Amino acid sequence: MSETERVIAIENENISAVFGQYDANIKKIEQELGVQVVNRGDVVKIKGPNKRTVEAGQKVVYELLMAARKKEEITEQVVQYLLDGVESVLPEEVEKMYDDVICLTINGRPIKPKTLGQKKYVDLIRNNTIVFGIGPAGTGKTYLAMAMAITAFKNNEVNRIILTRPAIEAGEKLGFLPGDLQQKVDPYLRPLYDALYEIMGAEKFAANMEKGLIEVAPLAYMRGRTLDNAFIVLDEAQNTTPEQMKMFLTRLGYGSKAVITGDLTQIDLAEGKKSGLTQASRILKGIADIGMITLTNQDVVRHPLVQKIIAAYEKSETMAREKSRPSRTLLRKRK
Picture 1 (cartoon, rainbow, N blue to C red):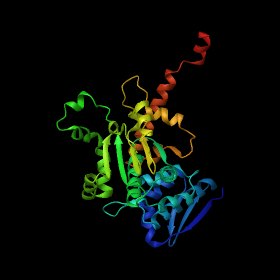
Picture 2: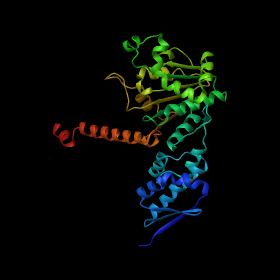
Picture 3: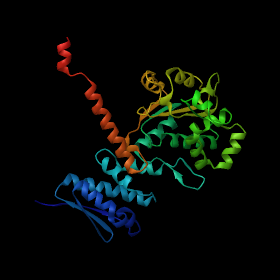
Picture 4: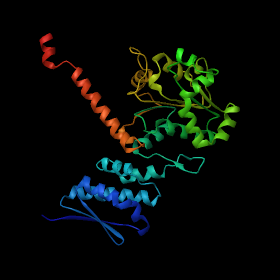
């Protein structure tokens, strides 16, 4: 059987980044695609008996080379993402993703989408007044929304940032916590504070909070207000009731933009209560200027194990749903 071979020119300074420590990146490509990848001076050769897998290997190596040229960190997760998307992801799309810098953190680290799902999410925020970002933990829903909010604020596109999330334990449990109401709800808002500190810096954040230019508050504080010229992020929206969601959406004023994020697999509402995020994502679908995206476990940018955990839970929940459904035979008997 004849062997297929493809060649990619590579600069010496990028070889170590593409191949990874102890050639870990290349070994992963070889193992998953059944090809052989070797470095010969200023070229990389991809060989194998199957033309389709060799071309797939060539594509993944080329995308890793693009990442190396743009000084992107190439992790095990990046390699796996490119392998998983080898049939559907286009190199041009990957290049646009790497070029899309939203803003810099206080330490000068660029914040940018790390998956094509995240890139689509960011583009939806740019091009729509309201965006629903739905997906599992670790997909960057809140963090990217915060980065977009801070960028809009710095560019004078909005006058203030409003960050909110429901405090679903807003009854007895909060009452037993020490301090005033703000101190009671702060633990529920901590993830929003953490993102603000990292992107904006603690001092600038505190100064803008004092001036009222940044507001971090529980969802209940939104009632009765009209929010003009603001970038509003509603986090953990799966824990809103339909009434709360309608109340929030109708707060939107002129010159404002809203991003609603949530994970429909982690609804903490009392049994029997419907999620406002589930309802809104259904009834508002297709309305102009409202963008919606569902991120998946492939968009998870935390530890690679998080992807596997989410996939395992999804599989378990699917199997449980299948078991709970009455069989067709049983349905026929009932009829």
